[in-house]
Length: 332
Length: 242
Image 1 (cartoon, rainbow over the protein chains, first blue to last red):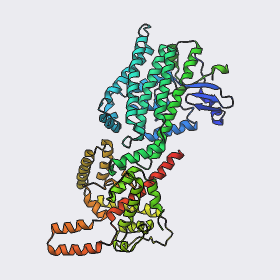
Image 2 (tube, chains in turn green, yellow):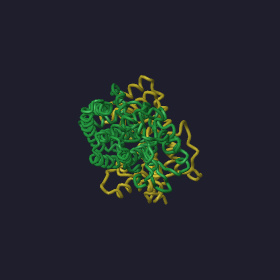
Image 3 (cartoon, each protein chain N blue to C red):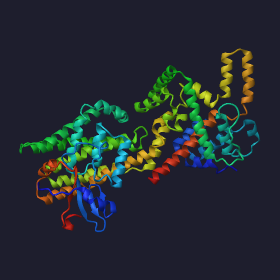
């Protein structure tokens, strides 16, 4: 094993005392501003939020605990909800293997998904692109290609599979962001915040898939450019005003007839919108800190593929902390 | 005195959609000037809420206090005979009265739905679902509403909004009439259509007594919109704090 790692629990006292602060996937020393290391989910992780504590050591951190409670409250379970929750809390680029695992589990659950996301389906119909199942199938294929690229023992074929995954994820990422921007789901009365978050998370899932595939291929220039695009897209999508969203939903409901309001403008709407924003912001923070991991692997002197494969071998704990090098300049 | 009172404040904060909704309820032609619309709404609401005989003697169109309007609505919705405990001179606030009205409206809808047999509720739910489908309401929302009607669980629709939910529904016209009262012209028309001259005279006699009371079919829904504006402002404040 060439990847040194620590158990995050060792750092918990520092986090709880306020000496270290977590932003996205990184831990920072508050007094010096230096990055202590980045958190990483690893191989044996098969259980998803919100049912099981994905971060048993870290969940004591107030912010994560709050997010987990929120996910529980929003009932983001099964179907794409589980994928979304992983995407929302996915720790790093190479953590996409977990997302891929979840994606495979949603196969055969399309009907259930359609019921859960009835409002999204209605909106998609409105746009004349009734292709929800096709979209999910394509994401599934992309994830499969990516997984094969990681596990393939054929040195000549894995790269082709990774490039195929890049293409598919890139298409799906653009489609999902386009759909998201056309629908403007945070401000629509007929899209519950939970469903808006699902749409957001789908787009982020595709973005993470593309980033992981590009990370595997190892072209740092392309990775950096894609990362910047993905960060910009996710930031824009998460950047909504809670008050304006509430008002827009209320007005939208009124304009369509009073009956609409019963099931859409409920007393807990501000709390649900706020919870969704918290998760969306957390996702953006995660994406924002992905670049640190790419740098880390470069300094480690192993190929991204070796790195991903090694991490998959770690069975316990399911989240590790990859410490930053002592040289402060390399950590900032 | 009431110029600048809660009605003014709520309308000041009303969105364009809410203003349009109030214009529709009060049967005012909406202009492109929000200030003019809001003034019309205030005058029309006080006129509708006032005793039409007393209105003749009011020189100031803003003379009727909002609290008086709320007490009348609360009394109208009070179960059985008699009135509520609220009086103009007591220390109850407008917000307390609004909460009472909101609660009572929900109870009335609940009572009316419970009077229907399960089969009737199911039939109503289907009819209402069809109405909503034609309006383009998403299936998920329709299902929630239909479930609440079938199960006679108005509360499941969410506080405050349940009252307005079925308001314009033809399906629930009977329930609506029971809760909000029937306009005098409907009484006369119904009498003419359904009865002989004797009953018509009786209805006309009843209508004369009905005339000076507030026009509840306008006042109650308008008050409910004002209450909802308060809830929205509270929710928006909560959003800002989060």
